[in-house]
Image (cartoon, rainbow, N blue to C red; front, side, top):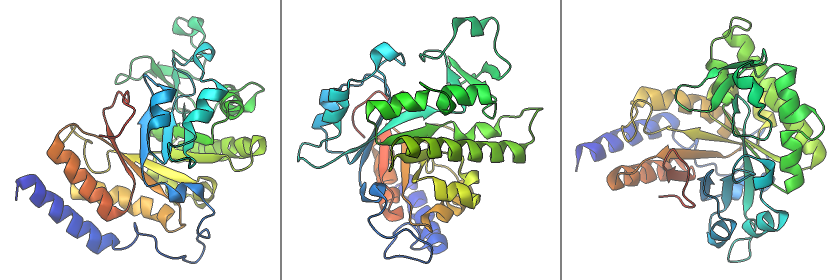
Length: 312
């Protein structure tokens, strides 16, 4: 047995002892949604692609869920056609595939249709500095109504474009923007503001399309908020097992456990969790698959560029 396999076995043993059964939801617990009420509960495999989208390729895949961008280039002219999205929604065997639109609500992206070129030299008050790890992405004061108008509050908002296109729901990113310091709001106020943002966005989406799904990525600290847990339909976690400090490097047991302690709050309500790991080494990928299978969570494995129509 390799060192990595030994570490994996040790971690899984510890997690099983601490969390034994939480990730294999069998039957209903008090307060849990009845089986079959949440369509995401039937997802066993998923693909996450934001660049180089080919509707024909995605349509030929067998994944139960696809998370994609609503546009090939972020602009309205690049938006997927209704016929293309309809094709992606049907798997080769004729069964339905859930298709969610990626939507960043904690950062503004300079390649999006809403971006004003003047912002680069004269940014609005709600627009913050560029994220040093992602060129073209800018922190925002997400609680500002002017930003929220772009995302969901106004006629023709980003959310309305997604609903009109025919997506089954949204996959919200940069939920963890509440971690970014701001003199205007302290940490607890930022967390509450993000939870309320998601709740209001979800309400608007479901008013436009009953059954509209909302999956959030990262920011598991918000799962302690009961209203927030009730609002969302699912949760996705990047780098639960590997990659906090370096791509391909296993996270410490305490780091993984800290996230799982919070994620278990959602699982107790019967809602699904999805994992995204960014890996390339075959042995490490196999270890991640083993861990995810033990935890009972659908796993996507890819590169951080998210430019492949399949999970490795």
